[in-house]
Length: 279
Ligand code: SAM
Image 1 (cartoon, rainbow, N blue to C red):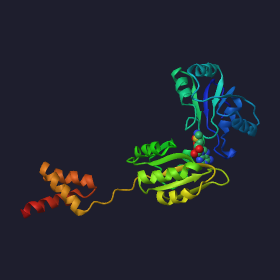
Image 2 (cartoon, helix red, strand yellow):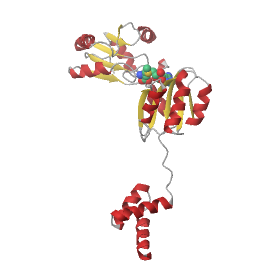
Image 3 (cartoon, rainbow, N blue to C red):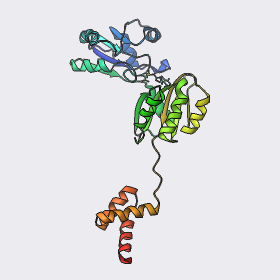
Image 4 (cartoon, rainbow, N blue to C red):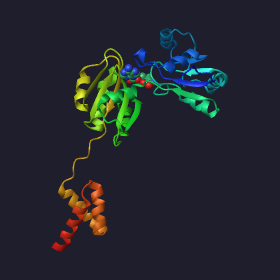
């Protein structure tokens, strides 16, 4: 790929710890940018030093006023404007959403140079189901608000991804245990850095461990989906079948209860016939 030539907004993902993860396209885009929108000029300045470039940086966050964003969009109309965050993918618990929204609404060219994000990297290291997941970002720091947020996620059949920090980790895991029950989980730390680790276990094990220990560095917590509901007893299934037979013909009652308990419809239908012949 050659350096970008078209004016527009380029969303550029940057490494989350290991500079070797800066992609060639990301490097070329940053080198070609007329302006780089950054969270912190010192952090992105180090990245630019690493690639030996000195592009112009401007601080951006989504709290800027609409008129400030309008001024940035004026630049996007005729220049190559790159958007980065301190680390990882912009907009993912980082600034950028409002700018992208407004740039698209104004009909400007917007593209992304994808790359690392701690959420996805942690999911891949967690050993937990990765087919369905929900990214929640940072939970509130106060227990009441945090437990309310967790309660809203309780019935979701998906792995849950949270950003966290070492000093709040123990309390966050304890609240998760009390609201979500004792699920499988992983504390993934310092991804792509020297002390990268993924500590897996049940929420009770992890909350005990991190109740006593406040780990350093950057952390993602992954909590697995709720386990399969406990298998229903024969008595529960028969009671549901008798109740359904009051409302429905036997074949439909057997079908409804089979779906409800994920069990064999034919066997239930035969049971209804046996009950009828015993009368
Ligand atoms: N936009 C970034 C991304 O795509 O990963 C995330 C920005 S968010 C402000 C920063 C949080 O991401 C950290 O507090 C931590 O929870 C997580 N994080 C970032 N880098 C990490 C790493 N190397 N290892 C583990 N977690 C990381």
